[in-house]
Structure formats: C-alpha cells, structure tokens
Picture 1 (tube, rainbow, N blue to C red):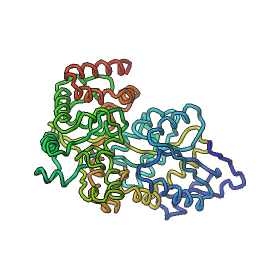
Picture 2 (cartoon, rainbow, N blue to C red):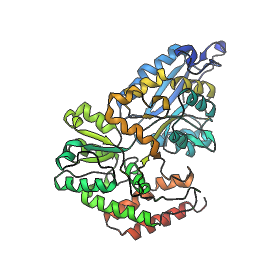
Picture 3 (cartoon, rainbow, N blue to C red):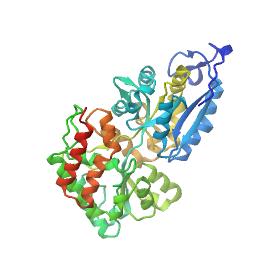
Picture 4 (cartoon, rainbow, N blue to C red):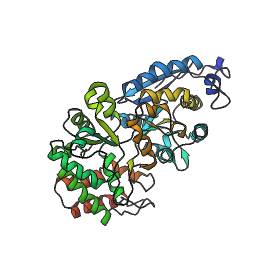
Length: 431
C-alpha cells in the first residue's frame, strides 16, 4: 500500500487546487491535511507515451505544486481487473485506480462517492457525454471520474478496398459483406475476433446485435428477450459474413490476433481501437498511409452502434485521505493537465468532456474523427438494460460472443439462440 503519512505540521498550509496552480478553472483552493504520497494504479497503455507522460510530466508537476508525490503503478494488459478485485477485497493497496467497462458497478461499495467533483468537473468542462454517465453512475452516484473511451471501430485498407471498386467505407453491414466477399476472393480477407478476448469481440458483435433491433434483456433489467426474430436475422448474417469474408482461424482469435494479422498484411479489415493506425504509422509507415478508419455500419433498423469501452478513475474507500485523492482528481482533469495527457495518446482515449469535442487532438489525425463521433452511439454490453450483476455475468460468460461464434462454427441458428436464452434466463433468474 502507498506510504501515506499525515504531516500535521503542514495542516491547512498546503492547498490542492487548479485555481492556485493553473489559473483557476475549478474555483477556490481546498485546504486540508497533506499526505506525503498517493498511488494511482493503471493498466499499461497500448500507447507507451501515455504512461510516460504521467510519470515524467504530471506526477512531477503535482509534486512541485503541492509537495505530494503521486506514484504511478502500472499493471500488465488484461490483469487490471484482478488487481482491482484484490485491492477492493483486502482493503489494502493503491489509493486510486483506473477502472473499465462496468467496474463502477462491480466495485460500488469499495469506491468513494465522487459525485461532488464529477459535477464540478463536468460543469467547468462543458458537460459530460451521456456515455460517461452510463459508465460511472451507480444508484444515482458517480463512483468514478470519466476519462476517455477506447473506441472499437473499423480499421481497413483503403487501397485494397479501392482495388475491388469500393471507394468509401460501406455504410451498412450488407454493404460491408459485399465488399468483404470481393476482397476475400482477391486474397484480402477480413479478420474479426470471435474468440474469448476482452474487447475486440465485444466491439463488433454487440453492435451487430443491436443494429438488427435485438438485445439480451429488456430495459427493465430482468426480462430476457434474446429469443427473437431480430436475433435470428443477426445470427444468420454473422454466419454469412464469417463464411464469405473471413478465414476459419478467427474463431480462436483474441485481442492481439487481429492487430498482428492486419500489420502483417494478412487481412484487409478488422474492428479495433485506434492503436492499429498509431502503430502502423510508427512502425509500418507504408501500411499507415493506406489505413482508413470508420464507424461501425448500420443495420436493418437504420441505426449504427458501438461498444462503450471506458477508462475512468476511481478512489478506493480504504484510502486514508479521500479528500487528498479527490483534490488530485480535480487537478488532473484541469485542461492544462489532462489536455496534454490526451494529446500524447493521439485520440486513443476519446474524451468524455464536451470541451474537447473540437480539440486539436482530433485534427492532428483527421482519420481518427470517427472515434469521437462514435461516442453518441456507444453503450455498455447488456444495453438497453441498466448496469447490473447479471449483466456483468453475461459478459464474463461470453453469452453473446459464443452465440455468434457457435453459429459461425456450424451450429444452427435455432440451437445457438436456445443456448443463449437458457443461459440468460439462468443468469437473470433473480433479477
């Protein structure tokens, strides 16, 4: 656990406030006890300068302004939830942490209510996108400060699409199927994750389901409705999409598989975060020049959807000085601090504050703009039902992912929907 020592002799001397350090965005300084240090736990970013910026720029700046050292503890990709669980269950460990997906709900009782500063930051920052509230509000209380969304959108080879006569990225799933069929015949198949990864599978399968007007559960959070004609049409389409545009091995792909395949020029299109273009421009410039990015296609309903994959910052209730942690959060979200942090990530994390909707970060690489625009149609897995423990269990058991994957592997539409329906009824039986 961070070595937090109260310095009584400095009580009411140090103040932690953007007002005194960066020009007053958040109002009067907050006076209080001054711990010697606080620790922030964060999953390592796919964009290395992001972590380096916190360690080398933000933490030293806060130490200089307040005398408080901010330790930045990173975890390996995919292990953050396990580390958060351990800290929450033992009541020991870092003071603050990055959380994702629906963790604000999962760890509700172990996270500090930050409604006061969330409202303050939102008011000064032009308001929060609706998606931010979906990710961070639990039972009417903000349990985390939204940071940014790691959008899962379409990354594709513009040159290869053009070679088969597709000048603009298709606006509908049917249009993408037509393009993909041509591209596979030309030796450039698609590659979409269908295995048990943690992001790229959800990134296209939930939006596909929703775009057909289907869903797992009604908005009441308890009525299972997966067994529907809309679901069947989505499953039938997915099977055809897999058979006509992809290779068999995508059934076992996890999150690193499509990145590697794309950068090895083995696939022409995939659903992924902005990192593919970032890495391509840095390490594979010829691929970077011909990589395009687009929002997910529309379904038969005429609507398009995206998965909400938020990163937010929360404070553990075991933190000895919760006020000091809140003060740091306010300082961090001042645009003079957080703006630079966003900039080094090259829009990998789409900001949830409206004040950044037209920020320079979006114009440094215009191809990334779809990630900004996707915020308006992004939802957590399980939508339109509210965030809940059963919804979390459904995600953990890959109910929707497996429904589609089993159909692609050869099971009938009727069978895979019946399997999903039985699982969901068991999961939501006490909802």
